[in-house]
Amino acid sequence: MSDLFSPFIKTDQHKELYQLVKELSGRVKKRAKETDQQAAFSEDNLRDLKETDYVTLTLPKTYGGREISIYELLLVQEKLAEGDGSTALSMGWHLGVVKELAEDDLWDESVFDRFAKELSQEKKIVNRIASEPATGSPSRGGIPETRAVREGDSYIINGHKNFATMASVLDYYIVTAYVEDKEEIGSFLIPSTASGIKVERTWDTLGMRGTASDDLLLEDVRVDLDHLVEMKQQSKKPKGWLLHIPACYLGIAIAARNDAIDFAKSYQPNSLNTPISEVPHIQQKIGEMDFELLRARQFMYAVAEKWDQYPEKRMELGTELAAVKVAATNAASKVVDLAMRIVGGRGLSKHFDFERYYRDVRAGLHNPPMEDAVIQMLARKAID
Ligand SMILES: Cc1cc2nc3c(=O)[nH]c(=O)nc-3n(C[C@H](O)[C@H](O)[C@H](O)COP(=O)(O)OP(=O)(O)OC[C@H]3O[C@@H](n4cnc5c(N)ncnc54)[C@H](O)[C@@H]3O)c2cc1C
Image (cartoon, rainbow, N blue to C red; front, top):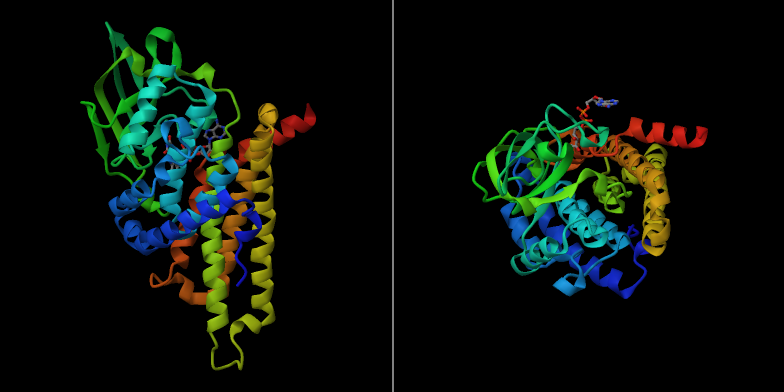
């Protein structure tokens, strides 16, 4: 079977990164069923990701990281997702946030310096926790109900967040809140050890169960003033790192495609004198899977290359980045659906991975940006 990754491996560094992640992908694949059942983030996966320095891939070289590009981030994330989508999506948030912080100077230099050193030396992990039950997806622009009130040299934060991926294993949360004295939305860097923080195990979903995206409750959490690290108006730039989302769902689709082809080549019912891979309607579906993957992946990697090679054009890339997400998540859903049709009723069985792929790709619809907003954005651009 042809390797779907080789067309995108272009340099020695790509080769080296690919070898690293190939091994990791194999390891997380073995634990995917268990983490899916438990709806928990695997401690064993976390240990492997730290021991192999996967968690510092996007950290600047000055802090001992690899400072990988967006293109390289997609390459490793897609391969990791082939092993386990949940692990990849979770790591995508961490690696993406670190890359954004390193490149966009969003934080005060001394605060970032302290944070980056901890990441480098202690392999700490971080995520943005923005979603809330009352405001829904932060991409819609709602004002958080989480409130930060100034009290002397501290802020006191109270609120309820949901969809907090990896909440129980994170070292830092970057929590959005309405900052009352500034009358604006800000983000606070909060250590997971802070008093008043509680993770509530609410994550019992159809798919992406291994992300353990539980609720985070903040009750009178007190932080120093310098923990208010960002104000909303600072973050208007398009976010190239969010391409980790399409890469993740395409990785899941590749796993489904590979398993379906393996099955088609090995399954020979006694009504046939060849494996089903020789039957025309199966070949039609295999061709359609590869067509979907080819189109979505070429689009994704081309936009990533543009992002990396032309930093001066990044402000113009917002619609393309958003369109990649929609194209990729829809393609991934279609590929997994085709894979399920190829394997037939066995695809429903918990003894195979197909039903997990099928459930996991569905979650892509609910990661940002949302499809209706992207289509509206394209229409607005065309009309204007
Ligand atoms: C696997 C997974 C991991 C996640 N990890 C994280 C994480 O780590 N951190 C984090 O902060 N979030 C995370 N999220 C949350 C995600 O970003 C969204 O906030 C969440 O999925 C809710 O989005 P929604 O569109 O379903 O909800 P809502 O925004 O409540 O939308 C519900 C419905 O109302 C419609 N709607 C709502 N507002 C508008 C509007 N203004 N205009 C038009 N239609 C509207 C939507 O289209 C949808 O049909 C994660 C989500 C998933 C699925």
